[in-house]
Image (tube, rainbow over all chains, first blue to last red; front, side, top):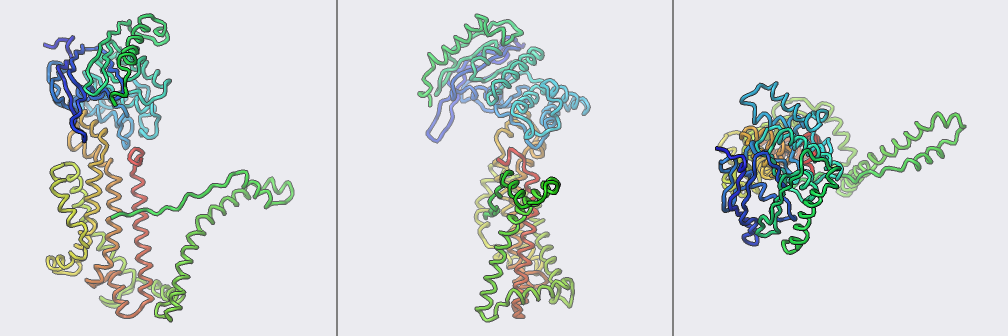
Length: 268
Length: 306
C-alpha cells in the first residue's frame, strides 16, 4: 500500500528544545510530503532549523509533537534505510576509507552475502565516488573533498531508501563542491534515490533538486514556501546558467531568502 | 591527579644561508678543497649545533643539581655525602647488583625488580578491573551517577591508608603492598576511561545509531579506538602513582624492594645508598613514563588529537 507520491510524510511536526534559558521552539507546524525518487533541498538562513528537520527525518531526534512517516511506517529511530551524510563527514579516523565503508556494508548485507561479495560492494561504491586508489588510506591522510566523498560512499553503500545530506559540501571550496555536485547528480540519476539535502547555497539547491523547501527564520521556523524546480534532467551547470527557467528559480529563492526573510538578526 | 608532560621549547632552526656563511668562513681553504668539503662541513656545523642545543641545557641542569648537592654536602660537614663519594659507592653497588646474602641483604637489582613486580601485579589487576569498569561507567548514565560519588569519596584517600586493611584481609606484607598499588592505580584508569567514553564525539555515536550497530561493534569499532588515548593517559597516571606509592608501601611492609632498601639503609645510616636509591627510583620512573608516552602517541589519531 505504498503510495509513491507520499513516500515521506511529515505531519504537523513541532520541535522544542530545552535550553538553559528555557524552552526554545525550533520548528512549528511542519507539513511536507516527499515522493519516492524525489530530490528535495531544504534551504534557509543559519539557525532556521533545517538540520533539526533533517535529524527528525533521520530519526536521530524525535519530535515534540506531530508524526513522521517513511513508507507508511512511523520513524521511531535512526536506521540504515535512511542513510545520513553528515556535515563534517564523521568518518572514523582509526579505520581506513575502505573499512569505514565496509562497516556500513557489513551491517546491511552481512546476513545475506559472503565476505567476498561485501568486499566487492565496498570496492564498487568507492569506485563510484572515484576513490579506488584511496581505499587503504586513513581519513587523516586525504583531503576534505575526498573525506566527504567517502562519507557519501558510505551512505550510498547501504542502498538506502532515503539519502539524507546535511550540508554535505558546505566545508569545501567552490571547485571541489561543483565537481561533487555533478558526481552526485550522476549517482542519483543512476540509483533513483530519494534525497533530502540541507543547504544554504542557492545554486546548489536549484541545480540538484526537484523541489526546494524554503524555511522561515527561527525561532518557531516553519516552511515558508515550496518551489518546484521543473528543469529537465540530466542537468548541466554550464547550459543551465543561461536557462530562463533556472534564472527564474534562482531569483525566486533569493527573493524569499533576502527580501522576505532577510532579517536574520531577529533570529539570533 | 594531574600529570603534565614537561616540554622544552622548540629548537630554533638556523636559516640555511647563515649556516652556509659560517661554513664558508670556517673553511678558508683552496677552491678545490672547498668544493669537496663544503657540504660535509655545513652538515657538521648544523649537526653540532643541534647536538649542543639538545645536550648542553640538560647538562647544565644536572650540573646545577650536582653543584647544589656538593654545596649542601660541604656545609653540613659531610653528614650528607658528597657527589664524589656517592659516585664511588654507586660504582661499588652496581658492580654486583644481583647478589643474595639472605633475605634482608640483597643487591639493588633484586630490590628494584621486586618493586617492579609488585607494581606490575597490582597495576595489572587494577587495569583488568578498572578499564572495563570505566567503559561501563562511561557508557551508562545510571552507573555513572551510581559510582561517581563513591569514586569521588575514595579517590582522595592516600593509598597507604588502605595498607592496614590489606594486611588484615590478606594476612601478608607482600599481598598488602600489591593491594595498595591496586587501590592507587585503579582510580586514574576508571576515571580517564569513563571520561573518554563520555567524550566520544557525538558524530561517531550518530554514525553508530544510523547504522544500528550492535553494542559489540560499537565497543570494538568506535568506543575502544576513540577512548584509547584517554585510557593510555589513565594508564600513565596510574603507573606513575604506583611507582610513587610502592616506595612508601615497602618502607612499611619490609621484605625485598627498593622502598625497603631505602629504609634499611637509613637504619644502617648508609646515606650514600639512600642517595643512590633516589636516583634509581627516578630513572626507573622516567623510563616507565617515557615508554608509556611513546605507546600513547602511537595510538592517537588525527581527529582525537585536536
